[in-house]
Length: 48
Image (cartoon, rainbow, N blue to C red; front, side, top):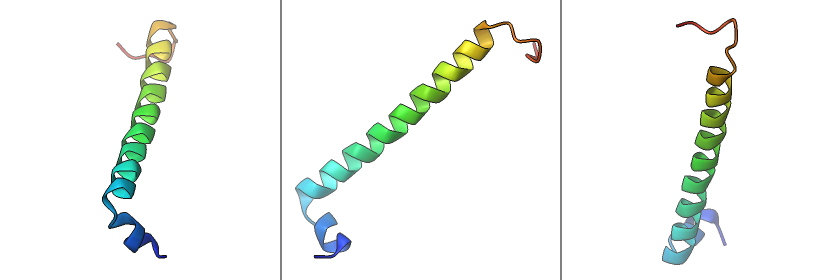
């Protein structure tokens, strides 16, 4: 069974899309957390 034929099945496509959105959300959270920590740390390289 090819990937295209798998993605044509509605439940598989829904699962794949949900997983993709979840991964992007995890990456965004990690980036936001790092940025917040950097911003609150008073780093000397920080520009006003």
